[in-house]
Image (tube, rainbow, N blue to C red):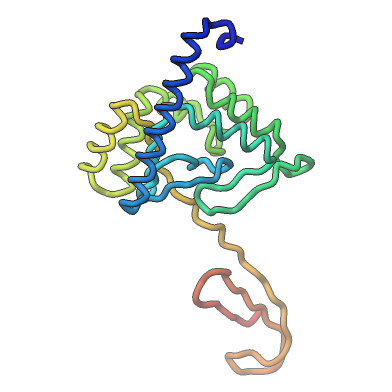
Length: 222
């Protein structure tokens, strides 16, 4: 290993720098939590070690956090959602993600823009799981990520000034992401019943359609 091949004084300096980085980072996270921000301590969560304010995440670790997270996810065999808090086991098999799927997805996130376009095209979806589009793929890679993140913050908060502030933070090297939980899918349940129609008239069969999660339902005579 490269680290083991270094002279002892250099290794000592590197170790001291690492301890200083971790100590300073933990202090910042503690102060952020005391100020009201959310800080996840679960290493299988994408928000692990990040400062969360609303839907915006700040990563102060300079990209090192993601390596600790992927190691924890593979070692523990599970992933906790950063939006819902639900835990998914990496059991593999049909319809289930495996440790290999998680590692492969991590590697895809490290691809260069041209290589990532080819990977998305071959997979048929982009990194977020949306259907692949050449136009969207080229457009999303035509400007820096820091600009994309700032625009996401401005749209989410409906305040351009927050977007400008986010751009200033990201320009200093602090990682910034903005996303929120996807709305739950609405399921329509069909219940078949017999009896007299609620609108009057003779007995017969009618269908009751209810929309789960909604506050009302509709019943009509077939």
